[in-house]
View 1 (tube, helix red, strand yellow):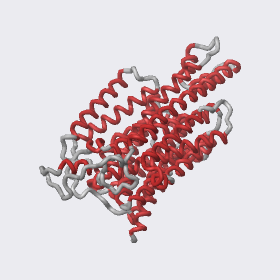
View 2 (cartoon, rainbow, N blue to C red):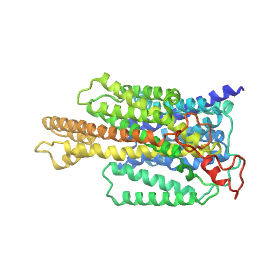
View 3 (cartoon, helix red, strand yellow):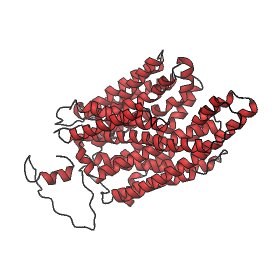
View 4 (spheres, rainbow, N blue to C red):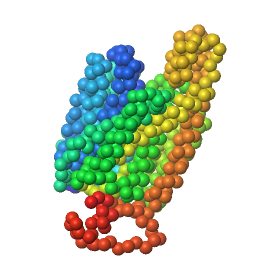
Length: 539
């Protein structure tokens, strides 16, 4: 098979796999009511059904990225895809809540093998820097589009079929990935990987899951509860020990020295903030469309679909904009567009002028898609090629943490503003009042059990309070994104427009630079080791 065909075939398979995972992250939200009716899970079980997939995925990304570097990224992607298809079948036909939780956990484990494999394969197949930037832009935009497609796909399936159908759609996609992947995907791995440090694995898992769990629970008002505090302490302690251990290993899971490179660390931070914005708005819109405007899941999914188009436009334009504005200017422009879109959202009210919302949605999603494309490309191009899987895992883990952070920060703003703006009528029973103060969904459920006149008053008050909270939330998000846009402009200054795969520390073009200490190969213990560390970011 010609090299060009193999390259673009690899991109197609990587994008298809990423689309499947992105859709799966959001498609469950619409299936929850039917799932609850069928399996009757308890309240804690409902939370685990919703969260265990993300916990397993985020916790194992770093480990699986390193496994791919060692056994081969193609092999891991195909094995993970087969496991994802099998776990999808188990999830769709789970006869009980306990088995559904276990199946969702297996889905997360399988997903953790696929995510870093897709990006690291692109990194190794596209050796031309300009082509690689374009390919990563396409991959990023497809992933972002999947978030918008999830509710639409779920709404369409749930209108006709049982709740498990939202997982069965993965099976034919997996069949295509495996069938075509066997023919077109090239194998790549670290030629000298060393052994996998097993003690680092549970440390990374405990650290990531502990912090994400604590952030999610804090958004629901649980920040002061003992289990949440304990999870945060365990998470921070585990990550601290993990980072310390990595600095002492010859072959670490994460080469923490890479974070000394401004290009790498600033790109990781920007990826975190971009996901912060995307996840938050996805959750807010799901409530706004359905609970404030009263739209069906299918109509709500259709209304949010242009967001995927905006992300695709932004991601596809990344290569051309980097050539004109540089990496720092392009990332700053992306975050600035997202900030402007958030500010436009602040005009949303109880009645919707959809063309206005459409414009705000496309501006926001184009900015996020643009940001993702550039920072993902910078991350994998800055890290050594033989550690592409580990670098891709860092990027994906930053995204998962960004989503949890967005829910924690902006979710807290929304809930606080909602409760502050809520005006409860006199004569409301105490139990109903508590439910109304909890969430808009709880308020509407409580109103359904009240006398008609009182119910109408409660529902109207709750919707007004939610819209007030939404406006405060998006303005807060706009401020955060604007500050980070300025920060990215300076943090990524001096990063080359074209990265050829060497981990290069950004330099100011107006300042003279010292020549490297040595232009030849260096061995352990030689005087050129410091220069080599600055050039590659690793010892």
